[in-house]
Length: 460
Image (tube, rainbow, N blue to C red):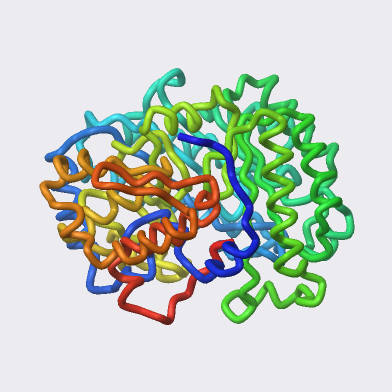
């Protein structure tokens, strides 16, 4: 796979429309409330028949303060006691879910996200992991990939030590931007010193991987100011980096209205920030994985991509495609059997379900055969920038050109514009198409071809 990225401003402007990020196919827009806990249990039965490893995602929704750019499912409170009843119900859900899955199935991946997972106390962290180990069969430290999202403002060196002791071996830190003017505008004041102290503590405690998250497109950002942040980040040598495109959607997310739209960088400035960021990071030795992600060449993500084993799920790029994902906690999304499912979105509804010893599933989606075929194609394109057509035909028992006849006019256009090349054997995304991979995937998306009104961010 060719790792380089080509910027063609005319092409980017022409193709810059709204589209999914494809953390699933079909996307969460298709989830519906006809899918309930009964259907979810049926999918668990199917999953157990297939066997294989598991992945667990825990949603800790609480934050001490609100970041104005945030579109995550969160609860803003300074009262730490609010976490107590939530965690009690989360423990209940762990027991309910674990009882349905084969006890011999090993949990190879585990992730705490939020919100701010380190909002809870050290004792609560220890108890949550102990309850998890009591009910699920977690892989040992050498074979498990256990990660947590960290807000450096909410984590001391002692916190990092506790997290390593209870089993975490990967850490992801929110940075966004070090520029003071940008930080003030987004209500996230975070010093370089406290950020780097957490990184030092993670390395001293034996964490295997450190990842940093940045956002471009925030108020007052310029190509030069963001390059300064990147220089500081590169100097601390993280294993992975995410450089997310901020989607300003104040009509959907009220908190984003706290920022002045006039302070947002114009589209051409955002593009320059992105271009310089990719150049800066690749010059520093990072591999462009795709969709905002970068990794060192020796990182598992980069290796998996080179070996055509990379996968994409609700947490982004992953190396564990064989795992069924169990979502735990309010709003969590899982992928079990041939389905996706999502937990209740409010604390009240979540608590009510568990008070009645019921799984808190409130909606989901069961994939049909067409969905599964299209998921394979979209996932491989977005992960590897290529598709072995003959292998797909053999694996899925289809005639590719006949099955996707509606996509071929778009493939012809993509080829004419230099985004990809294709023949009867393969599709190869060219450097000019790497940034527009979402557009290419959309050509194979049955649902997006049927609709014009979608709630997605711009692809660039």
